[in-house]
Length: 194
Image (cartoon, rainbow, N blue to C red; front, side, top):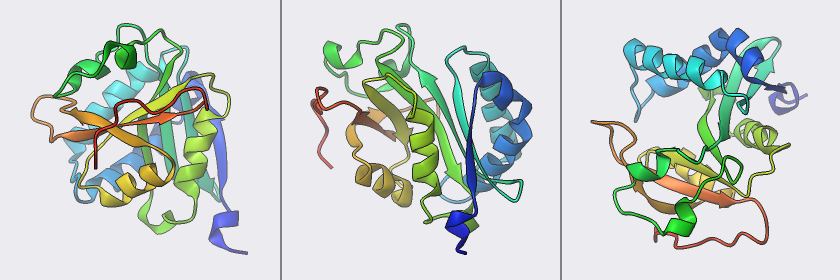
């Protein structure tokens, strides 16, 4: 039996994800310690202060991949509120019809990571699809560092297209902002080349 058939993916609401914080954190810390991220323990602590706040959202959805009870991958996100600041982080404005949010239109994919030993086995895609399985969103939005070439390539192969560049926090490197339409009636609009 191959490794790829030996993992399980579980969907978690905010309360369950908060109880599983150690599992999410262990995957995140390992994956984002690698280049190009090179996150420190202080960076991980800051990310999980945000995680605790995010898990309190009633619309939060998490997914945790495990093998023999050990966490090997994680993902989480939630629909963007009408007051989201996500679109304000772009270096160039996008059309108003693209940035309009109503609390249901766009699912924001906050994090997706798989431990190195388990990559290239379909786990990231399964985590992604599990998060979106019960979503009524029209589209998914995410930020990814362009120098994280495997992640960018995976997102592109799943149908995401770049719509702009953003600096998600002061001092952060520029990130590609990528959008995935989830419904056939939601065509890709104004994608950036590249």
